[in-house]
Image (cartoon, rainbow, N blue to C red; front, side, top):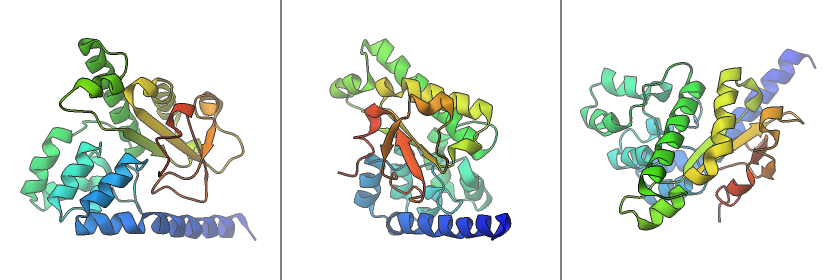
Length: 228
């Protein structure tokens, strides 16, 4: 079997695995099942991980309450052309919801996600410093408006560019105090050396992620990626 055939076969298998892992979530987004959506967002689903090359926001576009929930958990409307779609088709209600969550980031979608994650990390650290707390979890115990868990899931970790990998390493190393959790997927036997120490715990595929890959996270994130 030549390399092209092997690559095409894996592409089909990846797509099938992605569809299977996301079928119920897509249905929940389309039907506005807020309890199902929030359960997954609380247990390891990254709201910015594309599903069949589209943002989860796409599948919720007819349910403003579902859009609002996804945004509250960190969904970025400028990824995967979702915000452009809202502007092009004059989706005024959705544009209004998205306004507070625009990320103003550059580059390809994966780089935008990382830039947004770094800004979220810095924001949470600033909040803790100003309020006199060591972690965002301590802050949440005393705050009226609490920060949500923030998940970042990256399949095919070896395709990241150097600058992207540098950002990811920084977030993974500092995420504990900010309640930010990173999971990385690999089809290689070895992780990038920069991440080998910070993401060395092997886990099951996070919710919505490709189940054909091996998945890793930091030790402090193992329970957060559990579906229990």
